[in-house]
Length: 377
Image (tube, rainbow, N blue to C red; front, side, top):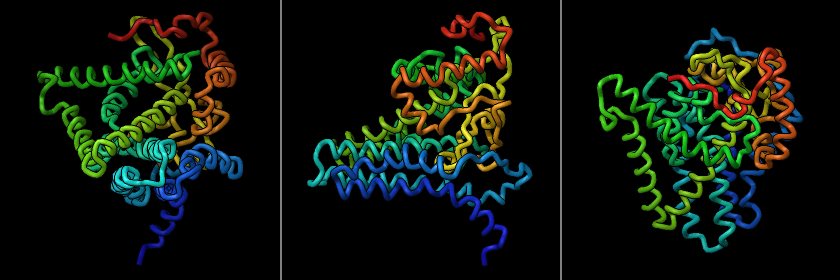
């Protein structure tokens, strides 16, 4: 018999399992072909956003005294996704590379949808796992990131982003008035450099060289190489190409969410290269219920920066008196981000109001706009 308390916890965790619908959807698109290949991005970006309109906001907070044992189903959710995503990606690479009924655009559509799945769900789950303290879950996070060839994200996120968010030293903080299409190539280049430098500096403080076996980049490269080898074994060179398309789309999905999370929000420069502490006001939040089911409460982003190792069901909501709020959930805002004039029309006034609300004493934002304030040494 399953204890009644566990049944109750499963019922509360059940909505977060809705993200698993993307696994059969990508297969359905691949098997049916035609316009069905776009069903996964349509469901991810628009259906969950439409459900938001029906179910509204969730501003309730979980009990922080909830024990880790009571989070069994929430932890299982992220852990079982790892083998399921691996089997789905490699299975689709094998299937699509041999599918005679799929034309060129349909093949791209299937792998695009697969990348939407591995980027929207897989990377968000990896983000949850990499923040945990036990080695098993961190390894699972590394495996998920290797499936999208972006393993250095863990080092960049843990060692750079969380420390320097809202400052010039954080590549992932989108600058005010910086369109996504300028942000994207910049962050691809700078985040790889900053993550490797952070690990190198960490090793140097232990009197170890960058090429030490303790450098996690060796693990990153090994896992990514293993994923590429698997793709080659199941699909040959064509399969390798298909796998790379999926990975590229997933990376784009990650960075468009990164762009949304902190756009234009900067920590106050205190002088001598120092900045104020990170506060709830330095992240964009969304309390939309359905997209928080999909993204396992990622949109409660202010609380995540306050308590980075807090598991997703325990993340607390911050209202507009404490943290800036988005008009829609992250998936729909990501669509806005693809159209910079529309994005700026919606978001720039919100950034300006945020500045007036929290920093009325700052009259010259030019240095913050260009992110040329002195950087910490």
